[in-house]
Each structure stands twice: as C-alpha cells, then as structure tokens.
Amino acid sequence: VFLTAQKYPEQEDPEASDLYATGTVCSIKECTVFPNGRKRIVVEGLYRARLQEAEPVDLYVNAAIKPSPGRGRKFADTMDYQARKQILLDQISEYRMAFHGPDGVVRRLSTIFDGQAFSFAAANALEVPFLKKQELLEESDLKKRMDLMIEFSRYQLDLMRTVNRVNLSVQ
Image (cartoon, rainbow, N blue to C red):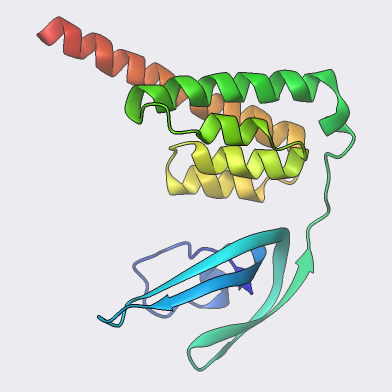
C-alpha cells in the first residue's frame, strides 16, 4: 500500500494534483473494526516512493509509483552523522521530558542504526506541524533532512523555554 498525504485535508475527493508526490510504501500489519464501525489500521513503512501517476477507482486511487533513491548511506557512516544524531537525541530528550516525562522514545531511537530509518523515526518523535513533517519526508538527502530536523527541534525547544520563562514572570 502506498500512503501519502493530501495537501488540503478538508477536501472530500482529492485529485492526483491534491496529493503530495512523496509518500511511503507500507505493509498492513493489523486491521481492527470496532463495534461502532470505526477502523484502525496498523501499517509498517517499508520505503519511500514518489507518485508517478494516479487514477481514481471507486473508493481508492490506483497509483504508479517509483521507489525513492536511498541517498545518504555513506553519510550515515560518518562522524558528522553521529554528531547530528546525538544532537537530535539530546533535543528530543529535553523536549519530551518537559512535556511527557520519561517515555522511552529516546532510548528506542538510540537503538536504530540505519541512518534513513533513524531520521524517519526521529521525525515522528518531533512534535512539529504536519507541513514541516511533510517537508522532512520530501527531502531525500539524509544530511539535509537531519539539519532540518535539528532546526525544527531547536525552534520547538526555544519556544518551550520562552513559554516557561513567560509563565514564571507572570506568576
């Protein structure tokens, strides 16, 4: 299954041009139908891909896709990558401790050794707006993606610190 996001979520019947071109090929791991009719589907992302063509068919879209190149493999073996990974782990840890307490996310992230897999899992742990996450997904270069993530998480931390400072000054 190829999953991608709509550019305009409020749109009922999106056209191909209303979908982001970059998405993820997934396998369906679990599908649960609840008594009230709602459904929960658990998927596992396998690899990134780009939408080539899309044709609406009944309630779904039949799509032609092309796997995205796995750029960044050599970079993931460098000290620069390890430094960026550590910066992200530290930033995510500080942010999550402030809002969620110790939840094990950073520990799980630290066990991911594949650079591409780490970058996507870390992006998921960052609490950034949807369009920023889509920007991360669209970036195929691992170094650039990690730099964007550091920038996004630094902004979130600065915002959190400012909110805390303002709250303390108001009290």
